[in-house]
Length: 192
Image (cartoon, rainbow, N blue to C red):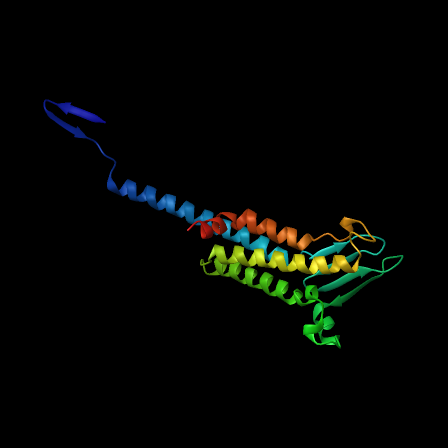
């Protein structure tokens, strides 16, 4: 409001304490929004630990997760599982002689777990380098895709069976979270 009295003009201002209160209120809302965003991102990253790397639908459904195999055998509700650590411990061949897709399996586990740890630090401590979490998810997607390709070759994808005989669910999900949640941070890392 401008009040003029002769040549003298005075402006009425809001008290400085109101400006500080408005800035504090905006900062508080922004902080709550950041915490909610970190928590939602954390939920998505941790949920990826339960998403299978590959699904082979068919007569006997086979699910290849980070943690092992699960398949249905024949008729009925019979299902069998084989944890990944048992596979590596029972393996008579040295690790280096295993197919590359099998050797990528521990990498997929490691990248997923490190991404979950990074997102957990963001929620628990309020400190997360989102470029690191996003990059780990991209690496997790690549390693999961490598495992899925190996599974697909064993199922004869493209030769004896259709192209969708093995679906790389884990790679697609990890890449979707990396791009959807951490995409802007990953782009900013490469623009500098």
